[in-house]
Image (cartoon, rainbow, N blue to C red; front, side, top):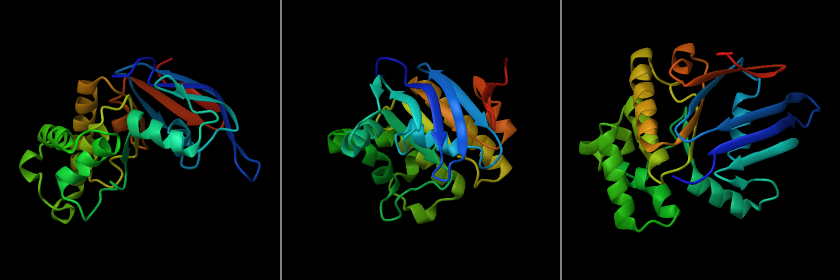
Amino acid sequence: MQNGHPLILESLSKILPNGRELFTDINLTLSNGEFISIQGESGIGKSTLLNLAAGLDMPTRGEVIVAGQSLTGLSETKLTDVRGRSIGFVFQAFHVLPFLNLIQNVSLPAILTGDRRDLALQKAADLLHEVGLGDRAYSLVSELSGGELQRVAIARALVHSPALILADEPTGNLDPSTSSEVMDLLTQTVKSTDAAMILVTHSAIDAASADRQLMMTATGIQDLDD
């Protein structure tokens, strides 16, 4: 695990090209192992906030610091390096590569960040075992259900030991029973690594599994536990 807080957002504001202020003066600090959820109406800015945390978009004002590295002023090459080393992503749409088998999909982020191929494959095999797919390592993506694909995505997000996991509606394409299983697995697996996680979700059930629940509104973000 990297030193420092996995994520710090300082006085973060975002104004859209049409002049609409999406949100303003958001402050948030995540510690190692902390899991927060963010709820809010569609269009309120939840996914934009994740994009800012990942350096995929830049704030109008404020600063994003990931694993001790400020993203302000970084080149795209350096931003890509920070994302590759410090952030794991779990998306609603899985984003697994159909031409690779499961172990190849999961090992890819570790290989891209400099791990030897044999070590990356071993990490991938271990994580596939943790998510209940150890016997499917050489299966093709087309052979898996939606729930199984999301398990692959969870393993892939963790293979390079990131400080921060960003999960954007990870159960949005799953039925309620599978959603519950995947959410339990995601929570348990992330906790075992001491990574911090932000979950963006419309599901109050999923949100309730977090250490802290936040709500985004037109006036900002608030802690539901306060």
